[in-house]
Figure (cartoon, one colour):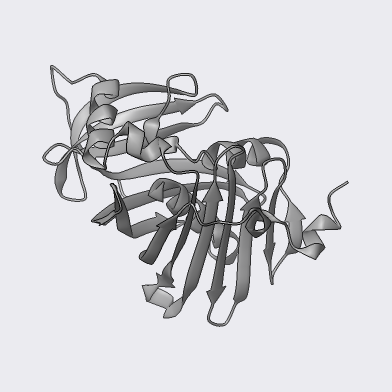
Length: 252
């Protein structure tokens, strides 16, 4: 679930600014990607614990250390249908919002105003809203172990994750703990293609699930940090995903 937060947060600020490669170590015998993913699922609490939840509300902060910019972050997510909303209020910028209501993807910020996502960007937004994305279900994701490598200074397995929308991401799983250590992702935006490297950490138990609470991202040459302060499940009202009035005016 945190990977979805990370991806949305990276795209939130893409209009406002201009990847950290891992060192590869080829391994002759690599574990099957599904085995690696299942180990991660077990480490964060298990498949049943993930599927037991239908929605999530998280709050925290997002900062860009090099610019001294920081602000509160809030995210809502739900399943059946998959929906997301993320809001960030940044010093000197104002409020930035990204959302997907199950049918429409949209964004709103002081630079562009309200915009609807279309084409490939909308398709990718729909996939990124997958509430149960941690499961990497085989009907949606084609996975393959690429190599044993070093990521964020830790021995990790690099796993190719090919989605039905044609996007190929790469997940990194800590060999010692089984937990996902981060990812490398490519996304379409209205400003062009955005590449991002994301490092996950600070796992904390929330109910029966272990949730990554800290994220460091490299996006378009800048580093941004996310720290989650609260996470709660199954208390999100449907109205949380209603687009703002300016966005509704664009929906035909």
